[in-house]
Each structure stands twice: as structure tokens, then as C-alpha cells.
Image 1: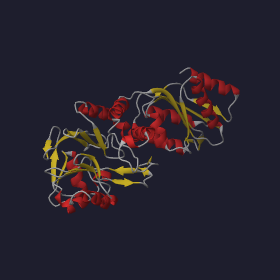
Image 2 (image 1 turned 135 degrees about the vertical axis):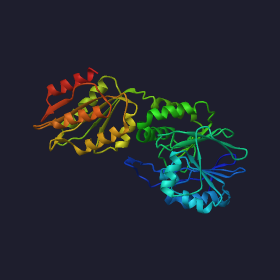
Image 3 (image 1 turned 60 degrees about the horizontal axis):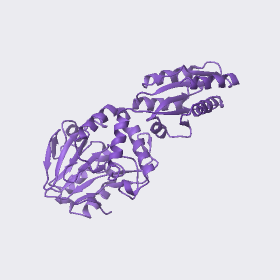
Image 4 (image 1 turned 90 degrees about the horizontal axis):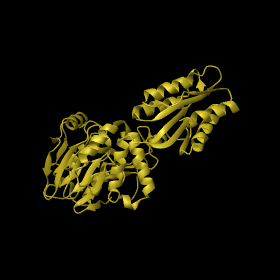
Length: 386
């Protein structure tokens, strides 16, 4: 359990969660990390802790560099337990440490969760001199909790970004230039889509607040540290937080006896024939969080369900509930589906897409019983009209 040097007198001392496969319904097939950072200076500083079950790993990595009892400052960027869970444990081992947290939300949240520890609340513009290094605190409220903040060290030109720019990605490597670039950017996009999409306006404000800073490294709260592709991930966040979409389509469906599946295939082929990249997702065989990562930057969304017991399929209902919570913007969508006699599901899907904030691009497409050649021609014509 050795610390990893990321800059002069600055170390990664976090924990790797190789086995995590779900985070609040978000499928994490590559696990995650809980990143914490140690700065050696006149005031020895720990930035964030780790999820409580990994506290001994955190302590061991710190101990590979210094005696934990010499820590003077602990910066708590975010109250959520995957970052703050080891605070009480660390305070037992750091008897002279003071916890710096955002005011008022961080102070309120940490006190409610862990009781009266030694807190020092900070706000926008506050600066802490720890020796040769300076820490500048920048609140990033609702990115993705009210208490969230980031910390910038101008001497090292490092942004300690907590949840921003992170990924759920467990790896033995620590830096972006040591891992597969395609995998890394996919996991960063998936993370943004499933954790931060809802807070796009707040993310845009945060990007504006960070713009004046000379950032040469982004030390994230989860996943990989950015040192080579800093400008690329900043540009990606600028695009995602501006709700910029590409001419791509996503088709999501469930099916009972194959008719809605046939409709989904026809819709997919129609998008392809229109010259548009398209993704096809059977909800039974794909994770919602992977689908949402694709939806993040796709202009068109088609969602289909047959009718069962006067309702849409529960799988599609769950997906639409998940999507509504993320509040996508600027998407053009439509509902489709099949039925035997009632056909209520298609109207329900249409309504849920509207509530989610999608613009309905074409009227819902309904097929009774089995698709005919006429139905197929009508579906292709509808997609071509987009």
C-alpha cells in the first residue's frame, strides 16, 4: 500500500475498489477508485479521504510517506461518504488536524453525518497558505451536491477536482497517459452523463469559475488523474455542459413477441439509411447507464414498448424514470410500440419523454399485432422526415 508521487511533495494516497459494480444504479463494470492526496509542506495537508471500508488502505498509503499524526489540515471537498467516510477514523489518527469544508453546506452536512469534529468553514475566495503551497477554495455547488467544492494549488498548477472530471475506473495506473485513451474518455463521458448531466447549468458555471486558472493537472476524486489530456477533458466538459448534441440517434426498446423489436430494427435501419450513426439497445441486455452515456451527445432518441396490463413494460418505465432524473436537454424524441388491443403503452412512453424534457419530433408510431410491409414503409418515411 504505497503512496504514488504525482508532483514534487504531492502524493496520491487513495484506495482502489476493484470489485464495485454498481453506484446508485449506475453500472460500474470497471470498478472505481476513491482518490485522496497528501501535500508535504509546513502544514501537512490531506485532500479528501476514502469510503469507510477502505480507511486502512488510506492510512497505509499515508504511512508510507509520513506519520499520519503529523497531518495539520484535511480538506473535505464533498460530504458524500465515498469521499468523507473515513474522516472520523482519520481524525483519531491525526489529533492536531483541522477539517476545511465549504460554508455553509459542507459544515452542515459533515456535522449532521459525523458530529462535532474540528471544522474550519471556507467560502469562495478563501486562501490557505500551508507553506510553499497555497490552496484556493472554489465552491462548485450542485456539482453534484450543494456542498461541493474544488481546491486549486497555483504553485503546482493542480486542480483537486473531487467529483468533477472523474470516472468510475479501477486501474493500477494513476495517469491518463498510462491507460487506453478511448476507454478513459468513454468512462469520463459515462460518469458525466449519469452523475452530472442533471447539473449541466451548474457545470457550466463551474467551468466559467475555473477558466482563469492555469491548470496543468486535474487530480480527480474518482478514477484517473489528468496530466496529458487536461485541455481535452476541459473542452469535453464545456461541450457537455452546453448541451451540444451530434447528429446521432439512439433506439431503446423492450419486446414481448418480437413486433416492437422488429419496429426497433426498422427504425435503426431507417436512421442508418439517412446517413446517421445510430445505436440499438435492447433494454433487457444493456445497462441503463451505458445507454445514457450514448444519449448524452445524441440528438435523436426513439423509445419503444409493447403494452402489458394496460402499461408499458416495467423495464422501459424504469429506464424513463432514470432518464427523467437526469433531465436531458435539446433531444428530439419519439415513442413507438406494438399492442394486441389496447396500446396504452405508446402514449405513456410519449408522455414520459415529454416530461423528461424531450421535444417530440414525430407522432408516436403504433403497430397492432404484427408489422406489415405498409407499417414498415410508414416507419421509414417517418424517420426520413426528421
